[in-house]
Structures are given as C-alpha cells and as structure tokens.
Amino acid sequence: MSEDGAALGARLRGRDLSAAPAALNLLESATDDAREQSASLLREVSPQALGGEAPGHVIGITGPPGAGKSTLLSALLHAWRDRELTVAMLAVDPSSRRSGGSLLGDRARIIHPGTGEFDAADRGVLIRSTAAGERLGGLAWPTRAAAHALAAAFDVVVIETVGVGQAETEIVDAADTVAVIVQPGSGDALQFLKSGIMEIPDVLVVTKADLGLPATRTRRDLSASLRSLGSRVTPVLAVSSLPPVQGIDELVAALAQHRDGLDLAGRRLEARRAGALTDFIAEHGARGLRALGGRHAAVDLLAAQEPRLGVPALVAVLEQRIEASGGA
Ligand SMILES: Nc1nc2c(ncn2[C@@H]2O[C@H](COP(=O)(O)OP(=O)(O)OP(=O)(O)O)[C@@H](O)[C@H]2O)c(=O)[nH]1
Ligand SMILES: [Mg+2]
Image (cartoon, rainbow, N blue to C red; front, side, top):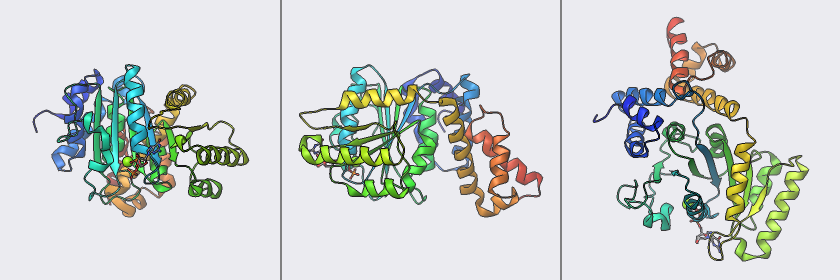
C-alpha cells in the first residue's frame, strides 16, 4: 500500500483532485488491509472531519439501456467545464462483461483510454467505470462510498447506472439529486411511474429532442402523469445531446436548482444511515440483523447516533452492538 487511506482522505478534504485516482483504487479493493484503509479515508472526509457536508453536488443519472445517458453526460460534462466546475463521473456497468469501451463512447477523447483516469489535458475531470459485480441492486458499494469521498474535492460528482427500479432506489440513497433519463416513446417509464415501481425522480429528462414530435409527446405525457401523481415540482425537460444540441443549459440549471432547494444535511444523513445498514447487512447478513434485534432496532440505533458520523463509523456502532450482545 503506497499511500495510506488517511493521507488520501486528507488530500481530498483539501480539494486535491490528484488524490482521486488512488482513492478510488483503494475504495475498490477488497483486501482486509484495503478495507481498513478505506475506512480511514472515509473518516477523513466525513462531515465530522469536514466541519459540514461535503460541498460537491452528487447527481444520480439513471435510465434504460440506450436512452442516451452517456451521450447526455458528455454534453453535460462540457457544460459544467465551461462553468469551470470540476467533475467526477462514476459509471456503474451492469455486468463486468462489459469493457467500458462502449459505455464511455466518445469520452475516449477526454479520458485516458487505458487507465480511465485523468487526461493530462484536463485535470478537472475524472471518469471511472466500475463493474456492479455480484451485488444486487445495481449500485456497487464502492460507488456510493467513492461518490461521497469525491464530493469533498469535486464540484460535481455523477453516478451513472443503467435501469429503473431497484438500481434507482439505491441511487436515491446515494445522490443529492436523481435524474431519470428516458427516450421518446418510452411507455415503460410512464407505466413504472404510474404503478409506483419507480420513485418520482427529482428531474426527468427526455432525450433525443431532435427527433421532434415523439419527444414533445413523451414530455407532455410524463408531465401529465406527474401531475396526476400530485407532483408539481419535478421538472420534465427535453434535451438533444447531439447537434443541434438543445436543453443542456436548462438541465444544468434545473439540477442546480434542485440542489439549492434541498435540505442537504437531511438527505445526506439519510443516505449515510441507509448506506451503513446496507454495508452492515452485506457483511453480517440476516443473522447480524437478528443479533441487533431486527431492522427496526438497527434503524433506531443508527438514528440515535451523532449526525455527522461517516458510514464506517456508523457500521462500527452496529458491529459493537452485536459484539456486546454476544456476537453473530
Ligand atoms: N438523435 C439522437 N440520438 C441520440 C441522442 N443522444 C444519444 N443518441 C443516440 O442514442 C444511442 C444510445 O446513446 P447512449 O448515450 O449510448 O445511451 P446510454 O443510455 O448511455 O446507453 P447504455 O449505456 O447502453 O445504457 C446512440 O446511438 C446515440 O448516438 C440525441 O440527443 N439525439
Ligand atoms: Mg451508456
């Protein structure tokens, strides 16, 4: 281990972007030593260490395959860079079989094709794609931890996942703002919304607006069903990510507006508690949960903790409790 987790975390806290690739490598490695170092890293970027919530805007982008997420993210990336915001993008591959080549598409110009890390030409951008692996739910845990760590250093942190439903629910736990991306004519999203399979996102985006009428119609249908569900605040935007590019500035503004209107501390606190419970269950299983007295007891215990504790500290509280009660 070349640099320890605490040092990397301290560098992120000082907004040193060059610490990010090594930090991500550490968070993604599964050895016992790396996991301990990861916990040290995360402690250094916890609200307790930062003296408040991490300043970056964590944005979850999700939508069905082929909806236009990657193309849209390319356009957004340029828009954010034009505003001199630094950007980290974490793409979660649904299966480790996918190489990332197609996922990253024309971002090959921006990233180092070999390493997926900083391009020498633009140190304000980090793009990383991770396999979701065997974990259910589509959002590999290192991605959630990584997003929160990177939010200490980058202005914008994007988590991109494929699909709607469960993956989206996990994104909601991790992101400040969730944008669901659909393409024209996607009745699925409409059905998911109406049936409650999909939670109401913070922002809805219809891509491929250059196709004209189908995009206009989908946007109108989605707006109507949101209204019928009683949601008056979710903006529905139509964008074209390919020339003639349109709607990107409006989307940048809508995302920022959501963040500005957010109870950030409240949302992040919920995210840390949910994340701690997920991590604890991944580690100790149903048996660990029983040793805590069940899910409700675990939730109550987490809710009783100091709000600025990071996820590893919260997991440690749960682990101490099962040790005290005779172990699991
Ligand atoms: N006409 C038009 N086509 C678009 C637009 N955005 C994306 N596309 C096309 O739609 C296809 C899918 O785009 P991607 O950006 O790869 O979609 P994705 O959601 O990332 O797809 P997955 O990574 O497979 O989930 C590609 O052929 C794009 O060129 C757009 O604004 N207009
Ligand atoms: Mg993609």
